Amino acid sequence: MFACCPRRMNVVIVRSIYQAKEFERMKSITFLSRNRYFLVAALSMVMVRASYCKLTKPAIPAIATYFGTKCRYEEVNPHLMDNILFVNKSLMGPPSPDCRAVHLVAVIRHGTRYPTIKNIKKMARLYDLVKAEATGPDWWLDDIRSKWRMWYTEDMDGKLVEKGKNDLRHLAVRLAETFPSLISEGNLRGDLMEFITSSKHRCVDSIKAFQEGLLQHWDVRGVGFKHYVNDSLMRFFDQCQRYVEDVENNKTALKEVEVFKSSEEMEEVRRRMASRLQIPLSQITSDLVEAAFFLCSYEFAIKSENSPWCNLLDEVDAEVLEYKNDLKQYWKRGYGHDINRKSSCSLFHDLFRRLDQASYDYRFGEVTKAVSIQVGHAETLLPLLSLMGFFRDETPLTAENFSQQHNRKFRTSWIVPYAANLLFVLYECSDGLRLQFFINEKPMSFPNINHSAPLYETVRNHFSDLLDGCDFKKECELPTVKPMKTEL
Image 1 (cartoon, rainbow, N blue to C red):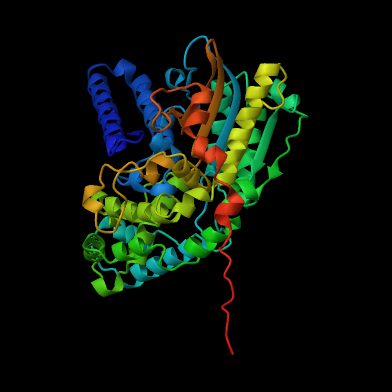
Image 2: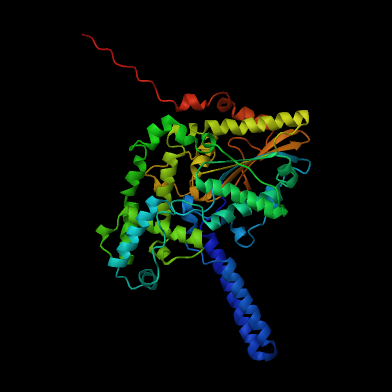
């Protein structure tokens, strides 16, 4: 099972660090009382440590690892909170010392963004209700009523924030450090790196930030990047008519989500939130509960703040809300409906076309492309992962089996946080070409292949049914309805 984001561990780590620093501080104070000579030096050290802690270790909400597609990348890789450019060479290295990376395809989700208009409106309704009706005595509620202001505006509508640009700049540097022979200044100047993006502004801005990160890393000036917009690859779901008709525009496609919104688990979350606010339960809808979840997640992801809104929900509540969001992604982008997966056929074939070309180049000694960087959405990554069989649970996620799904594989908080990335790396090894897969900078075996970096031909054979079929046009076309014959 893929376990890159242990539950509650981040909170424990931060508390332990805080306790250790507090212990050091108390020792320093005791020491000062005994020896005044070190007063200035010791106080300076405490202040520097406190300042450093404040800058690099923001208070982390207890529910930070449950935010699903609104999860920070740092929650998936907690070591980045200490050093945002750290690369774990033991995890990201080649399969064996005799292997050399010859090609990389990276499919990346855009970085941290503002909420969409739909969610901004939900958050504004909750803020207005709390401001007007909440009577609870807690300090955090007083902070919301007296200090917090609704600063999200509809013109933000999903735009990339500065933190999101940094997500991609930092990822670019880490990947350049991990694969220096591929993501290199020489390959940039030789036009051996290709950049593709969705047309959405948050994706275009993300790929530009990735490019900026490389230029800054190499200290290169006077060299321009270009990128190509390709929605047929990065937003294939919009162009798959069967998906649009059967899922996107079908009100019954997400019936499991609607049933779960009225479940006893969700009712308990509503009751607890109403109690904390001391607002009548009838005024707390499931949409407002979700708005509180959003407010906590956006304040943390965008501003690195443990917002007072986070106190409206505890970890029990967060588990329920995470499951509700995972249900949505499962039935809308994952295994819930077959067309969800099949809509990504075009991206799947493009991936293997690039790998096949690199394999051909390797055999004949002429490299045409070394790297492909593709930036899209969570909705881009999830169908492709599902098509290839990653994170598939034996028992489908439904509204009725929440209690049996605590250890599920399909958990979007782990899979598609902001700046999530799928890396397909082709290696030249002594026994042939091998393919290694990484998700969010961690190696992961292909489903039903018992090798971390199998021979490329083994991978192709494993996916032969998809490679020989999975025709986007055929899968996505709507069935032709023949006109009924009438007799006079």
